[in-house]
Image (cartoon, rainbow, N blue to C red; front, side, top):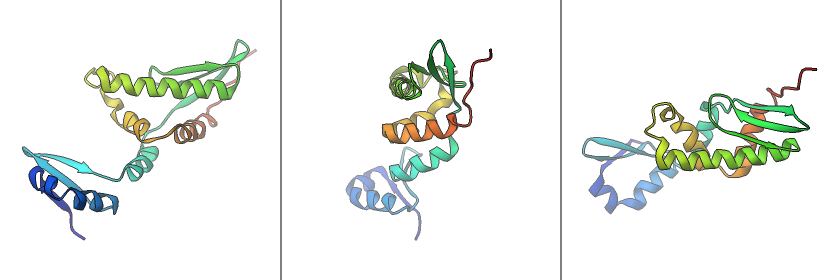
Length: 145
């Protein structure tokens, strides 16, 4: 099976073939003005990004509740329980992805979060929770007395 690489005009005419090739796992790209655009099945990309993008999620018990945050990213959530803190964190993660696509993608200290935002876009809330919890369970901090 060879790589499917088509100019944009031909890709439009063969759109079903392009999607079928990408869905089947075939390396597929469209070229426009010497720029290559890769097409890949979304679940394949999401699965790869889960392995590549570290959540670095932390859960901290504080003030009678829980805080959840992602180290190195301006994203956090809180709640009375771990579940509430994670729910709030997932909302914050989605809001960050929207902000990234709206205006943060070109800001130097946010541009490197492209993979993170792609992972968020390709994941439902259950996927995000699984990804965050798998990381956070290794990182639970308890308050020092």
